[in-house]
Every structure is written in C-alpha cells, then in structure tokens.
Length: 228
Image (cartoon, rainbow, N blue to C red; front, side, top):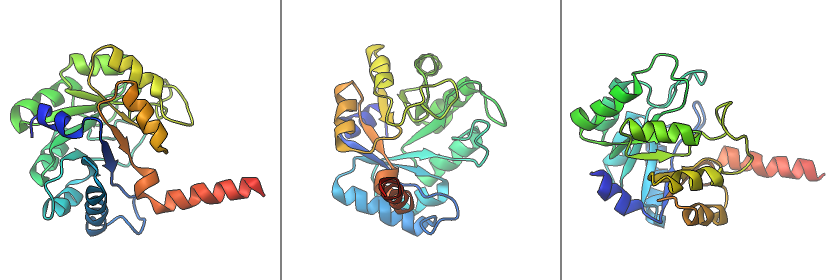
C-alpha cells in the first residue's frame, strides 16, 4: 500500500491499536485477530499491531491496513521497531506501513534512524510512520524521510509534555508545520478524537480504552476507590 493510499484510507477516520500486555490472557495471535476483526466490523479504518505473529494471524482473514510495530521489553532504550531486521519481519507478515520510534536520544541496540527509513523505503517498498514525543523530533524525523509522524510517545519521554490526557497542542504544532500527523496517546473519549482532527490530525489512534479490558476495569475500579 502506498503512503498516499494509506492516508486516503484513514483520513478523518479511526485507527485502533489492537495490542495486549505481555503475559495477559489476550496476548495470543488468535485473540488479537478477533479483536482486529471486531473493530474492523465496527468501522475502524486501520489497525496498529505489534509483532509478526499477530499480523500474520490478521492477514489470514482481513485486508485491513496494518500499521506494523515490533515492541521490545527494554523501555530505557529505543523499543518500538528499533532494528531494520524487525521491519523486514513486519513487512513479510503483511504490514501496510512500518511504525518506528524516532525519539531522542537514539540509544540502545538500534539501527541509525536515517538508514532505517531509507531501507524501509528502498528495500521494503513501504511507508514509515515515526513515533515522536516533541515537535523537534517530528521535524527531524520528517527531514530524514519519515512519511507521517505520530504523537504516540508524548508524555512517555522525560523531555516531552507530561499530561494526563492527549497532547493536542503537539498535534496542532506539527500540523501547522505542514507535516502529516496522526494523533495517538491517551485518547479516551470521542470528544478528544474530534478535537485532534480539528487540530489537523489525519487520523487518530485509540487503543487501551477499546481493546484492553484489564486496563479499562482498573480505570473504573480506581475511580470507585477514590470516590469511597
């Protein structure tokens, strides 16, 4: 799928991140596939999926656009698709576009960002979505050739805004620079999604509040406990 076709498909629509925390009951390819099928049935434009096994499971049943990522366990370094070899695995599994972490500093066992983007374009023939946490990172990723940036990691790096809700201001800042941006990160209500679209996002990724019953249950329990 070309980047232009991907953007046309998801524009002003919802993308759902279908992921499960490791060692939780949903952390099985057949269950991730069922979740993806369910959100597709409801009208999701695309899904964001972690790992080749999960992508392959979905591809057996669906042609929905898949944003492929490869998460590693070590959150102290680059952990979202850090290596080119992982991008190859995602492509072979059926990813439509590759998402990778483009925050600074680029530390740990990871491929140089510019090299990563170039090779995904030239050798895999896929577009690149750069997960960033600040405007400067968005600009730098775009200059290195990223096709789209996503605000996925705002609030998850020490140098980005630490907000309880989504970083709508970052969406606006990036859109105002003319950089294609997808909003992601702590979107919990339809109103927040609409706000992000009004601020210039191409699309919005929502995950936990749709696809993680363990987290959703804890959210309700925490509110009950605070109230009593």
